[in-house]
Image (cartoon, rainbow, N blue to C red; front, side, top):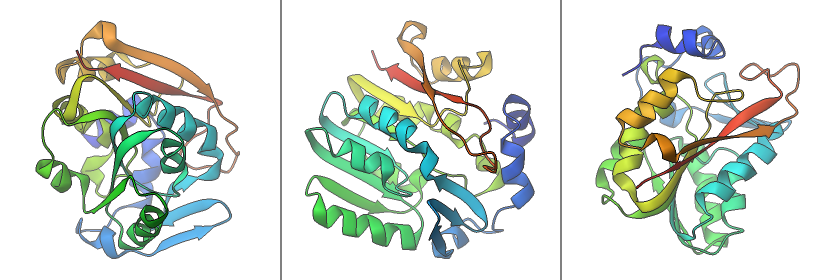
Amino acid sequence: MIKPDIAVQENPNYQKMLDIGFPEQREAWQAEKAVYADGKLQIAGHPVMEDWEDNYMQALADVAARGGGRVLELGFGMAISAGYVQRHPVAEHVIIEANAEVFERLQAFAKEHPSVTPRFGFWQDVIATLEPESFDGILFDTYPTQEEEVATHWFFFAEAHRLLKKGGVFTYFSDEVRDFSPRHRQALIDAGFHADDIVAEVCEVNTPAECLYWKDPTIVVPIVIKR
């Protein structure tokens, strides 16, 4: 597990999360108010998502859903990536969300999209109930709910490998500007992915100057295939 101080060394944007602080108990995140305003979502004072991410979320969704079949999405947020996944002919779209108010929006979204299966809870708990090698695509975009979860997408790599079918694809909000850091790439390899199957595509974004969690004009779109 990567300690927060090491994560900050890898990506200084994480310091903003630590400065804001997290609820003492993880379960408190579930009851925190979800504030949707001005194209942004805030929970417990954290900028969870903003609408400038739209084209990046589309890129992630297009990767995760490109093979159809069963797609697992972790984190619902503003439904940006979920909406783009639904543009693909997926058989089932399982979405995990931990905040109660955001989950209510997910349930409403599911009523309009029959392929969506909403699951409430923290991803660490819900994925334990999912069968190995049962998904064709995975999109991981959750927000940390505790300090030790900073750089949380790295913690999920081994689970992504477990849950993907052979030939399945994994993508996520990478927190990388133009390529994977050596430590990041090695974490994917340690999780079971082959070095030749780890690709970093670059997405251009128009990040507002006032954004707290991203300052760069590009973000990496990971394309990670399971052999």
